[in-house]
Image (tube, rainbow, N blue to C red; front, side, top):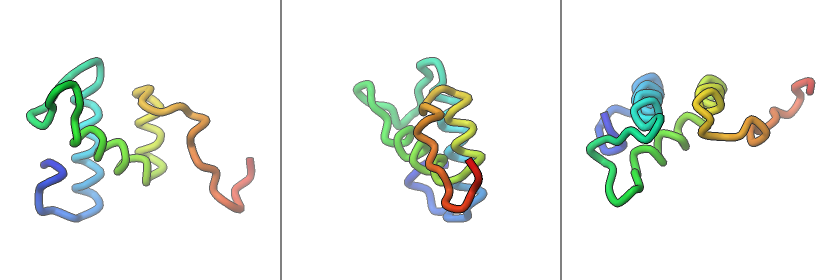
Length: 77
């Protein structure tokens, strides 16, 4: 599945984004990669950043800094 595929189910989008960031870990590429950039990877990072589990994965893969995680209003710090 890619950013251009038809499925709009949240679980499908999350899984596709998860697989994309894992594929790109340590310099991996995909069919969407071109000239050192990948729109699929950019989409995947954006998609995962919308979910707590996705944020955790991005942090574990060192694709985002833990300090960039937004705090939720009303949550203890």
